[in-house]
Image (cartoon, rainbow, N blue to C red; front, side, top):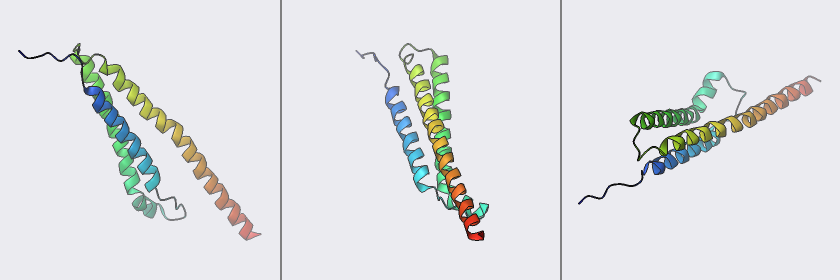
Length: 124
């Protein structure tokens, strides 16, 4: 006699996906070339791995949202508890990005401000 599954194992996949998104985000920040006094094309080429990793984060978010919608449409009792988990993980990834991006923007603004100050100092 075959034993019926009592719980879904999708939460393991969701945890792996959030860890992959977090690692991609950290790697994108680490691989970013923070040299801003080069032409845009050179900056684009230097930061291509970071942009690819940001694309991976976006793909993971889309996969999580699509999987949550599919699980909800499927309306299986076994996977019903996984739907809120998928949305919570997506919210965590979005919040992690939202909270880290302003810090990154402030850091870039500080670099630009320092560069402008140095140029003004050189003129005087």
